[in-house]
Length: 113
Length: 112
Image 1 (tube, helix red, strand yellow):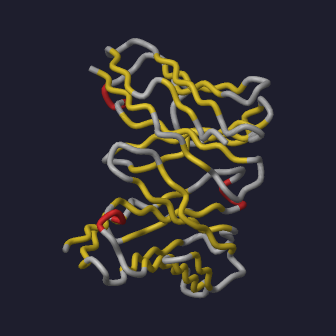
Image 2 (cartoon, rainbow over the protein chains, first blue to last red):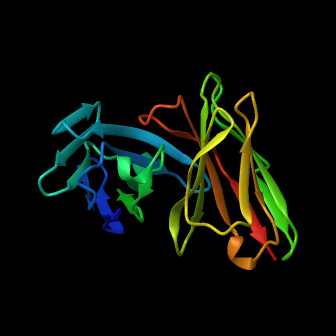
């Protein structure tokens, strides 16, 4: 079945690194995504990783994928107050059909001085 | 390049009424998906359209329907509104391949 789980809350100090974790159940997932949602806004695609990759880096963002454990993480280096938002992990799998993203419940990241 | 445009941004309707939401995808994108976001259920997939055909559908009652026009713009309709339909409705646009989906700002529907 399709299920994506995330911890609900993370608090970090400005300048530190943030690590947001996600687990998924569908081993046939092809792509895994991280989206950011700020208050009153839609979803912003941050990055994605193909299931045959272990790591992807994009400026301050690093995505790690452990396919054996079905674990995905997003590391944000030098976290800033502007990074405060809800972060959603999502997957697409062939079993879900075309363009059907399965989302986790979202992790609220709070950045404090 | 313009992003995904959803109209209206906010809507208040009464129970029993019907509502139509609109989504204009990024130019050149042929796939439009719709999602419902509520505090209780999170983000849930409604349906996906590609070249005017519904390719995928989520687990929502038949009161939720959609369509896509030849210019790829999509509309979503909810009939006989219930209080539980109050949500942020998000539209996502992609070229048609299962890689990048870009979301609009959403339409916040309140049913009273």
